[in-house]
Length: 205
Image: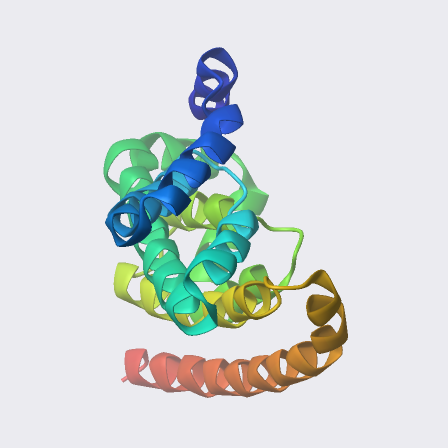
């Protein structure tokens, strides 16, 4: 990750994102593949992605903007996850083995994967791109991570694309949207706990 941050500072890629978005906006439908590529790249390069969802809502509308942002975010999460898993996981596991607290965290994540994904995805402190890199380093099944990440990123994306047309709409719609998200999160946590019990019961046979 340090290499990525250093690369961004040297090349100034993060400063060129507004230029890229302006080009995509002026390109019409032809800019959609470029937007998806930019979303994917943002996850790999640890760039903020909420602004991309806002841009999608303003440029393509709520429905299409949500669909495109969700596709880009899912692809980006998968790309970051597998880059860590295939190229840097060995080094990450060596670091984890040296610290007892990290070993325990790695073991807990393996046993309660879904619950940890939910916790990390609903807490704003954890940026979406960084989460994918982190989970790529620990013992978690790729399918479980990608499925639950895709589901949990959707409410946040809808929030930004739906309120993109007008900041006042974003503020006024916020309480309603977050109430819906809260209900969804409670349901997801309940499902995750049931899923974890089922997996633990199945493994004990």
